[in-house]
Each structure stands twice: as C-alpha cells, then as structure tokens.
Amino acid sequence: MGDIGFGFAYDPSVIQATEIYYLVFGTLTILGGIVGYIKVKSLPSLVMGVLYGVALIAAGILLFNGQPDHLKNVKVGLIVGLLATAGLAGQFIPKVMVNRAAPHVILMALLSAVGMVLTLIVFSGK
Image (tube, rainbow, N blue to C red):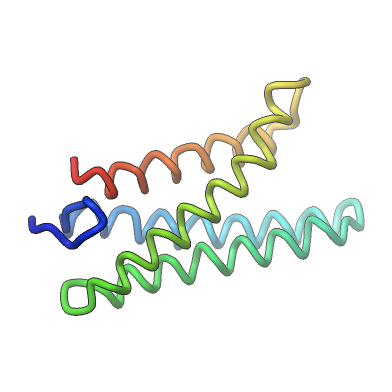
C-alpha cells in the first residue's frame, strides 16, 4: 500500500472491491431507470438512471484501468464515483426519511450510502 496523493493510499484489494461495486451499482441503476420508464413512463427515471449508471460504470472502468500503472485514473474514478453516489444519495435518502418509501427507493438509498462510504474509505486510506 502506497500513497497516491490527495491524502489516500493505494490498496489494491479495497480499490478492486470499489471497482466491482461501481460496476454492479451502475448496471443496477441503468436497469432501474429502464424499469421506471417501462412501468410508469417516467422519462426522468430513464434519463437519470442511464446518466448515473454510465457515470458509475465509467468510474469502475477508470479504477480498473488505473491499477497499478495509471494511478491518476484511480483518482478520477474515485471522484466520479463519489459524485455519482452522492447525487443518488441526495435523490433517494430524503425520500426514505420523509415518508414510507417503496422497496426500490430504500434499496437505492442504501446502495448510494454504501457507495459513498466505500469511496471515502479508499480516500482515507484505512
């Protein structure tokens, strides 16, 4: 494990776990947007699901392509992943806290929060 700047350390196992998380969460986010559009004809669900999903998949690919030779890709991937998970958390967590949310909303809030925590763990180097 070595320092890669921005105050966080390069730990391949944690970064690989984060990479896989981003790829899976991104795929689920895209699928959720598609399902939202099919079920209730929600164009915002489709657009935002695809945009956030692609951002998360891009973050995962950047992490994969950054190990261990191009650590700048790791930094960029983590920043993109953090922004995407924070955006999703900002959308879904308030819905869970305000009223009785549907199961898919609770799942997205939970996955967003886990993604943010995982990313912050990588940034902290713990």
